[in-house]
Image (tube, rainbow, N blue to C red; front, side):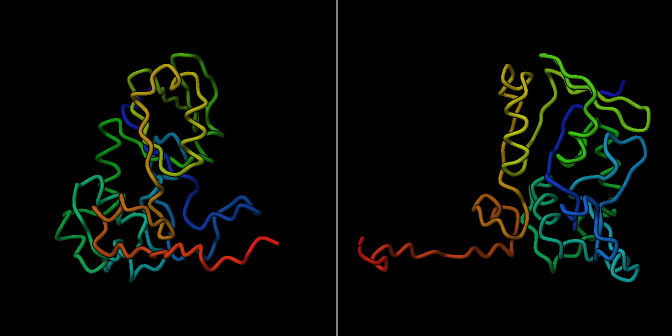
Length: 202
């Protein structure tokens, strides 16, 4: 049984088609995959399907990843920053280094499908005949409303809510000001909220 110390939860893999229930075959980039992992894909961590872009270290162009890796490294990053200079390794190696410490990044749609047993003290996940345990000491960090709502309903986290972190999703269409601390390119849409433009009530 593998122990999960930290679990980062996203929503779906990159370019996931909810109607076809699979990732677009022609996606510009996809989630990396690691052996002995609770889910098929590693959430947030990408690779480019175009080998040239992969070799050019362009991963910080992907907003979701830029924000997550900025949060993890406590750095404010830009798409023009040189990834290799900053981290000295590829996203796959970073994810693998976290894995060795019991830190996993999974998407909600995949983790839900792989939970095989629940109790008030644990959740058991199975993938490829291997097992992982989320217990009372596991810290779960949920990104986005779907992940937050799901884990808040679990008895394990009703009893241990201090181990449940909730965050806005790091995708490019999320303008929560939290991400400006980790994304130099954060450029929110400013709403003027001018209710004086509303028509009179009939």
